Length: 244
Image 1 (cartoon, one colour):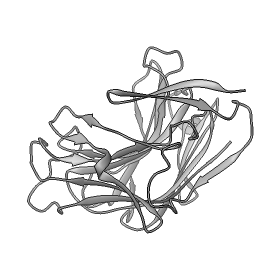
Image 2: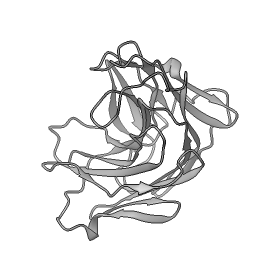
Image 3: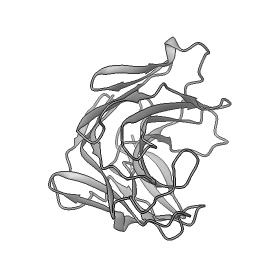
């Protein structure tokens, strides 16, 4: 049984067919062992952003057994700066309701470019059960703090407590998303469990896909790049895995 799904990437829409039914058990790992993204699984965004920066496929590459997503430019307004963003969302990618997603990643220092990884819905915001799940945001340029975010339909985002560490080295990030709870873990230790929050959280129920992106600042908590920002700031992903 195949289900037609549509994933919107900026101005472009990618049609895909899910090869797995919602209740089929399987595990798949992407180890980025090739020389380019598998275009049957992954898509790179081409999107103009509100601060004048953009996401471009040119800022995404596969090299040395890792996915590399970069940001370049030091304009403090953001205008003309360019970064990369990808999703595991094409025809043979993974768009699922519930499961466990894991990534092993490290991030270059660089103010003005924030790595963000998470699950985003394959549906519009007016769809019942819409929401999103952020495994990790790293807004600060030193990569010493990360935090997760959970948002269910009809509620504001719930920010998890910041975790302090060295995120310029390899760490394993994971999220388990089930009908009645979400847990987010760092190197096997749970850092957010919706069952333990003071207030109930609405859990998203629409199919979602994994994304990894560099968000160019200034934008909210993401500062502007400056003269001390490296000429290129890169997020490195060693592997990504999904298990139902």
